[in-house]
Length: 368
Image 1 (cartoon, helix red, strand yellow):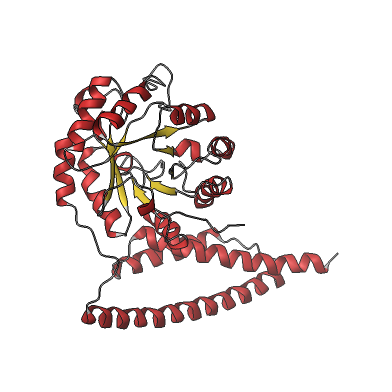
Image 2 (tube, rainbow, N blue to C red):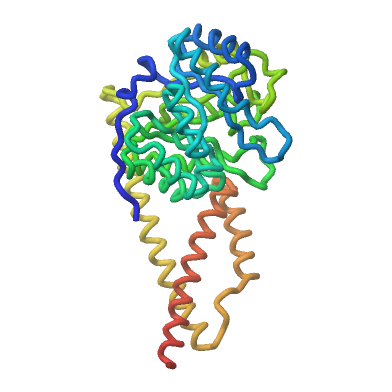
């Protein structure tokens, strides 16, 4: 059962300067004291106040660079004391949390692999009990909204109220131009459930290449997300991890200068009148869609009754393949994407199968 989250607004976290978007920047990994300080100084000159760097790196293969470890926290501490920046890093265990607290880390985040493990999330939550620092939660590796929400609930239950999320995309076997699939509809659903939840996008991990960071950043701002976490390195060509997706501080400054932040609302009378009229039209169309779906389901139930009477199997694969092919062609004529049409009609088909299953199930109950 989903619970209400108690959330402290991000403007009360005392981390970010006034204005939008909220920006967190820094290298994928803290690699050396010189690299950390040089990157931080150049980011600070852009007006960015929150510095990120990975201390412990969860890597897929052994014998790769898995982070400098706890000694790197001293470098972050220096960034905080000498440059006045806030510092943050990823935690994946209780020990990580305790080390971060010891060195005065201002904010931590849970990575995608950690979010996917409720045991680890609970362990981290217990370590953060009664600790007043913000915690950001990246989406899990798989597109599981409940798993994402569950991690937020575990933190909230131990008293962590300065919580937010980071959308970094989801792993996929499909061939796409990005490293991770955006699945924006999941982010939109979470935003709709918890509009007060501070919401960041990590375009670096979503893109996997600097080539796509700007378009992803702009898309996230168009959707009304609050901020960005962008990997930035003083010399990306020498980076020990994720070199292809890290900007230089100068590239970051140019990117931030080009991004357009959308307003949440407008006092313009003409805008309000036009938007209200268009939304009223959508409401009418939505009512019609529901009526049509209900009518379709009634027919599906009648088909189920005929199948029951004639002892016919529910699933007719060749028939459904034919239907799907037809609606995809018709959808293309209407300018609808193939993915949208297949997702919609597969959902309708699943519901129809469930209705017919219920009818056949009632006959087996009657025979007992």
